[in-house]
Amino acid sequence: MDGFSTAVPPARRIYANRTLNLRDIGAIGFDMDYTLVHYDVAAWEGAAFAAAKSILLQEGLAVEDLSFDHTAFSRGLVLDLECGNVVKANRFGYPKRASHGTEMLPWRQQRDLYARTFVDLRDNRWVFLNTLFSLSMASLFAQLVDRLDRKALPGVASYRAAFERVSHALFRVHTEGHIKDAVIADPSAFIAPDPETPLALLDLRHAGKKLALITNSGWTYTRAIMEHTFDPYLSGASWRSLFDVVIVAARKPTFFTREDQVYRVVDADQGLLQEHMGPLAADEAYHGGNASLVEDAFGLTGQSILYVGDHVFADVNVSKKLLRWRTGLVVRELEEDVLDAGGNTGAIAALMHEKRAIEHHMSVIRLKQQRLSKAYGPQPTESAESLTAQLTGYYQHIEELDAKVSPLVAAQGTHGNARWGSLFRAGNDKSHLARQVERYADFYTSRVSNLLWATPHAYLRSERGSLPHDE
Image (tube, rainbow, N blue to C red):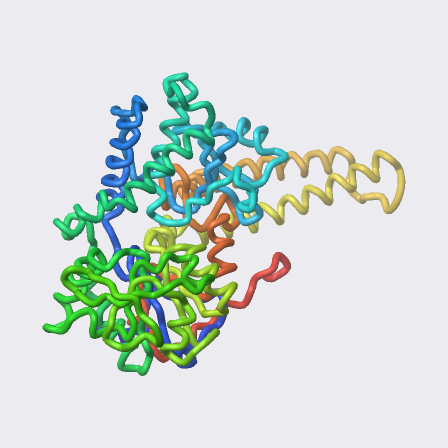
């Protein structure tokens, strides 16, 4: 791709929630994992699942036959720790699909269960799965729920307790390096490289943008992964040459909220650290620190800085809410989500427009029948028999339309994830994830290299907001 084509495929577009002029941005920070570097989800999350299962086995839980399916759950779902369910909610928090453990709940049972309940992420009953790193958690939790229902988890007294065991095991997996050592040893087995990303960063850098890498991963891991992913496409240069500031072990989201101490990496090979005082220097790598140091290093604050990551809360929510940085969210699944499911969207819209018109005619006929039978108001010119015949004809037409719409809607409902549907939709409404993205991310896109299509000089315009009365 030359980066100058005007025919941008939907999967590679940048979708703006708020208008953003990239020419006004002086510095751009990037997360690494699932942002600059994309992983093979089945491989990474499968390894995390296996490592966490091993920890649970060591703790005495009979989980040896649990298995991982990376398609069983998706980003944006919510765990209900009270009921042992996995829920997909719409933007208002109303559950639209749910499973109890691994089994999908019938619609009526789901409706009755959540008739007076909505998802409120401020309540610790709910756990939001907002990154691809959450897939192993959802899979383990759901299968432990199944075991708990069969009374096959002695020592685990509740669904919340099952979640806490899973959460603790995965915390150990990520902090003790169970997976990262394997990735360093064989990065090609876990990483899906994007050769276009280095060029996108070069475009930004040569356009005068200051670039920062700000990742929670440690130095040894970051160095190995960035060398593998970037260096082969830089014509002999190092990935380090792309960034004015490199910060590892950033501990986001507290990186944006606290004034933590920063250390300089004084030995790139050994990862040795030295306490650092004063401003950040170019061509150095740092461990820890805080967002204020980045602002001081660039001489920029607020809306002059853009931060791009994959985590709705740790990357875009906090940096926007507290620092007023501009924000971009990378959602790789968007590449599947934007597909039109065989053109069904337009066909459904046309059929539903026709159905609404017929329903209006039926309402008018019912009102005429009402006035005729109650003998009040303007009387219809048609007879009671004629009105009944018209209504019967409309009923038949509605049935015919429903027969056409139903398979199209069913096909769209399985578009994206086969069980949970589109990432950004819950039924006919926006999903809870879509609401979070809309609220906190100034733009979202499927990969950083999509900036090649936009160029560093783009004016990203948000669409005119739609309202129910808009035509």
